[in-house]
Length: 277
Image (cartoon, rainbow, N blue to C red; front, top):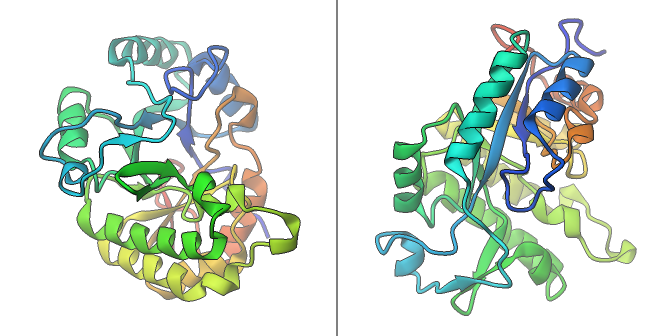
């Protein structure tokens, strides 16, 4: 049964300050959607990805030289901050958090740290969108067509490494991101196939006390998957629409809430908190 305390915050929203998001996706429109849904808070977590990085980054040590077919661009920090201030003033009834979604933070620790020193934020997501091959980072969707199951196992193993070697993020985003691009209906994605790999990720995350995101742009996690996190000692769950357009803010949260409750998590200490065991 769905909780009666209302919907949780949306901790994962993109606007036009992210390189892959349309100019029409403004903070104002996203806030209007959040208020219409009765969300208590929203976090604008723009993509923090690197095509040029610090020589001290692990990416350099691993011999990476570029990203395949990259369209990644830097965040306009001044523009982002100005729009954030404007919506905070316009919508006092909504708590509005600043944020970034750090791509492969374990590979770019020095670069991420330098960014956050100059532009500190309220929410930091940790994401893995790409894997290395022959000195380049490739989006996982590109690699799935070569070997879907092998890529998925490698992806989940890399998440363990990311969790164990980067402490910069508070929330692990879209734990099974490659699932969005799973090739072909004849090769249906089955979570159970990768249970042990999921559990290894969840054990690592639970050890740190950080939150697992239930991402509602990805195919929704099953109750079993979220329960695996609970069984491995996971303490906190975050909800994220991963919206790249205002209409997607808070999408399918009513379904995600039912899943998270059935897996053993409950609303936190206040409407703005993560959900907890």
